[in-house]
Image 1 (cartoon, rainbow, N blue to C red):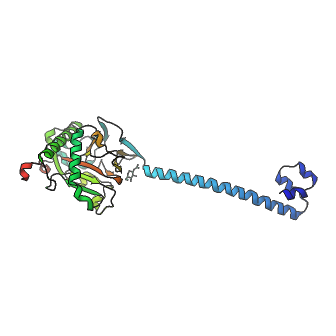
Image 2 (spheres, rainbow, N blue to C red; image 1 turned 45 degrees about the vertical axis):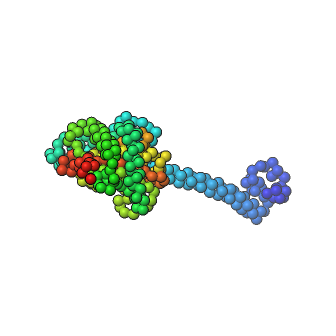
Image 3 (cartoon, rainbow, N blue to C red; image 1 turned 180 degrees about the vertical axis):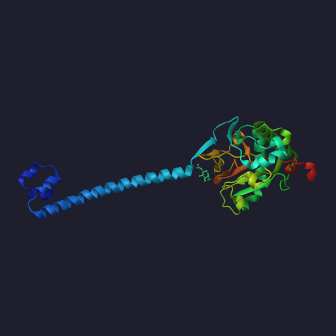
Length: 309
Ligand SMILES: *[C@@H]1O[C@H](CO)[C@@H](O)[C@H](O)[C@H]1NC(C)=O
């Protein structure tokens, strides 16, 4: 450019615009050469700008898409730092229960929903159950990401203290479900399986390990009418991932487990409540599932130490 300017006739000196300057150049070949040079320098600048802008736009799009995908449009129903006396979300009952109503009467859900309650049990009860779960599940290490220990099978050595605490906890949850759903306590029975669960980031070995698959408890376990969970670990502290997720048409909702708040969640077990647990990405997630039925023929007795001896 500087060399060109020297060869430019005097008129051009007043001109600041490079394009006009190029137009004042004497020969056609000079004009061509100049415009080509100008064209090249303009377009390479423009290309740079376009490339930079596109990279920024693409990057922000990808970041946005990643977070959207990560978040999966989920709302936190009860978060790890919340404390809830009772949080209830009503959902319309599925038609799963219509046939059973005649047989089992008032116990069969007429109102369906999801409930979270903190401090239904005491911290010493929850911590005692956690110690039992850890001890009982310590042999399960060689299996896949999920291990369960059925509380009513012979696999767990049951001392007096365990039976007392387990019964207390089960009775408190039983009472809470009956109250929330307006059922006489004596029409709602404990059923099987009722179990400790341990979830880790280990890869699944069998379909039973795939707790992150959406499922309906009433389909998985025919006898269930009400499912409850007592969380024995804290989300974000003892483990990552592993939030409980209820499916909903617009936004799925999560329950963040919290042992420290003695968090219990329970829900009607039919297809109005499809759910899954997110993959645990680190740490270990312990919980206990206590399940209830309206069908007296599917009822199980409390564990009884005398019967086991
Ligand atoms: C809810 O979760 C299911 C299973 O992961 C998923 O297929 C669905 O798209 C989610 N719904 C919303 C609204 O994000």
